[in-house]
Length: 232
Image (cartoon, rainbow, N blue to C red; front, side, top):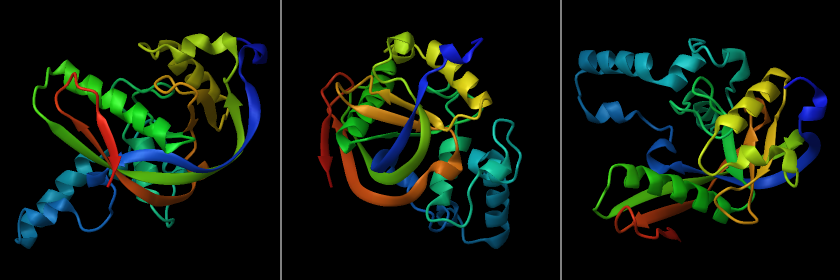
């Protein structure tokens, strides 16, 4: 994109209690699951070394990932490992406003929007493998607050291609341009929930006051079934 006229406008965001659903198995920092595999100290140390070599969050916190520097990550705050994981565990194919080398913090303004976004993507995963069995997925709703100037594509028809239901090509291109220009992130309409609003934050330090909310289950009778979403 050649000029500012091709970039979204900027809105001041003051939003508390945004919602991000994270699989329950990743939501606690307690002792490593590896401690359940062996009582032998030597074997356990070897497993921890293997985990450190393959865990993108740990690699990022050691400054060993190409997409994000250790200076950008957060430490010493509640759930800093949850925040850092969002930026270091990037999807291999990227997400709507992030590529495969650097993740981002995606959240929704309401829990319902977050639930429908997550349920849609989980449904697609099950359909890809033609899963026929019942599956139950559990999540923790992590709340976060945002204060800052974010690029805003709500009600901006110039960026309609960034909301393509089947392609992230245009949105990832825009995100790359905004990231280079120091953008905090993007506020955008939910693609999976009519009238829903989502936010993607590009900067770990701007994800504020992270805390746990409710626990949620999403149940599929099979890959093609309408999911049942309920609070636990």
